[in-house]
Amino acid sequence: MTSLTLPHDAVRRATPPVSAAARLGSIDAVRGLVMVIMLLDHVRDTLCTHWAVGDPMDARLVAPALFFSRTLASLCAPTFIALTGLSAWLYGQTHSRAETSRFLLTRGLFLMLLELTLVGFAWSARFPPQTIWLQVIWAIGVCMIALAGLIHLPRGAVAAIGLAIVAGHNLLDPIAFAPDSPWFKPWALIHKRSAFEWMGITIKTTYPVLPWIGVIALGYAIGPWFTRPAGERRRWLATLGLGLILGFILLRTINGYGDAPWAMVPGDPLRSVMSFLALTKYPPSLLFLLSTLGVAALLLALFEGRSGPIARKLAVMGGAPMGFYLLHLYVLRGLYLGAVAIWGTNQGQVFGLPSVGAMWLVYLLLIVPLYYPTKWFADLKRRRRDLRWLRYF
Image 1 (cartoon, helix red, strand yellow):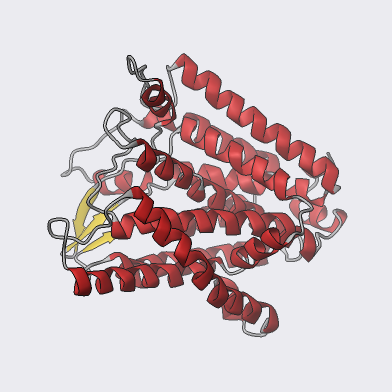
Image 2: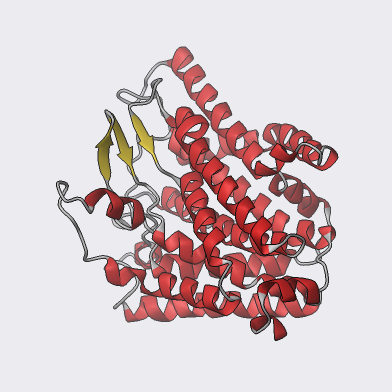
């Protein structure tokens, strides 16, 4: 492929433009799908906090229905961050490298600020918040800033860096620093999930960013696939997805690297399968990323060329990701406060739904009401391209 050797701007001129239909037909549809799945996990996070869910989940103790609901949601962050990298490459095909780098830098800073304000306020029970969780929006922002620098390298180098980070970051797991070490806070932000105090506020680094930088780099690296014919692209994505999943199965069976070991549960095949699938998300292990990115690649192949009503509606959701994200957080916060006002704190100090079935019911009832305002915002973004600030959402 010539794009492996040509300079970035030469590749941008040599490759044919990617149509809007191609982008909306696959990338936005998959993005919309994982956002809808994300809603389920955030219903759990908001209305089911009385159910303890560790990381990785304890396959011996957690209820199977809760386990598989949570496992389904594991797809969201890796897919979204990989698609962010892919979208950055596509953006670079119609903008100069300097313009692309500047956009990634400014939008990354904007997302980090958003996590510390509107997103953080939605998750906090008090205002001003006493605890701030640096979660997925923070991680995406940091990743975009890192990618703003990486795109100045040859694409092959970006791919190599991404692969090295994703495959090798678990080698850093034994490294730890005491809370009084000057390296404790930086390491908590980069690789070791932890908490620390800053200006009287507790900061919890839910999404240490190093592995996610590898993911966004790999998403960027496969960008040229999306200038190829649809059938060829579909085959490559399917091959990639199956290869990643096979790699996950082989490494997990060997049980020697890439995540905490799994074990057979005597007399309980279901919980043995759960143990096999119980993977570390914070930060995402190699095995977590192999499995989730493998599924993401298969979904991209599946949605390639799809134009049915479901694909179109998912593409609408994927065309306004930040609008949907902020909307659903505040809708869930309003539902929680309303439930407390009506029924009180029925699970100790919190309100909680009575069952996983109730969690799924609330989730399903929310999808359609959230779709229409998201569609309105997506339409606004398309109509008002003169409002440049809208592209940050």
